[in-house]
Amino acid sequence: MDMTLADDLTISDLKPGFGARIHDIDLPSASDAELDKVVAAFHRHGAVVVSGQTMAPDDLMRFIARFGEPEDHTQTRFTLPGYPKIFILSNRVVDGKPIGAHNDGVGWHTDYSYKPEPVMLTMLYAVEVPDEGSDTLLADGCAAWNALSPEKQAQLLPLSLHHSYRHFMATREFGAQVLSPEMAAANPDVEHPLIRTHPADGRKALWPSTGTVTEVIGKPGPEGLALIDELVEFMTGDDFVYRHKWAKGDLLMWDNRCTLHTGTLYDDTKYFRTMHRLWVKGDKPY
Image (cartoon, rainbow, N blue to C red):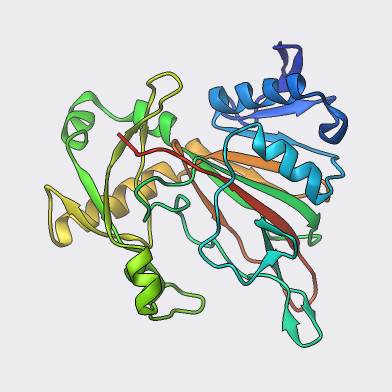
């Protein structure tokens, strides 16, 4: 494993050219200045993993605040009591009620792509993990963009996508539902560019999604949707994907401005999985 020293952090790639695994840091006891070095690494590398952490909710809130303003969750019923910015993903049932959302996030997507200002960062902290399954996969949109021919890049640059939360909720595989009038009003349809520019350094990323996209502006109808399927398949090929195999105490953060991600299934009759998810507010894609 190749290690480099950057900003006094010991770092290795998650996969060649993408992501950073940060070694030798204890996040709860780290100074704000040390945490800010992790933030800087995140903006450069597209994703960050820090393993072996013991994070109380207050530790998670202190850490996430170094990245920006924590984002609210669309579904509020599974937030941690007393911590509305911490969302629980779990298959545990306590007193006959689920304590978290189950099978959330399966299918390649980027978080809050149906909002005018999608989430910048998604953070998952592993409280308990199965012995097998439940991997999280990240696809590198910058590497995928750079691998396209100049002709293909020129064809894609002008295109925008129509994203719809209403469509996403009505068609999703696990628990499709019709939005209440209040939820529909709070989540109107939006348009975003297919190729997104990263505000940190101007790098470009292929930025399609599944689930929320109803139309390609500039290439309407089945032809446009077929193009999105083609691009998602290309971007999520082995060349561009990092697969995170979870261990208890892992903290994984990814940059929604330049990646797609998906969860994977596990045997929920045999294993329990509980994660804490936090989001940081983002800006308008351009």
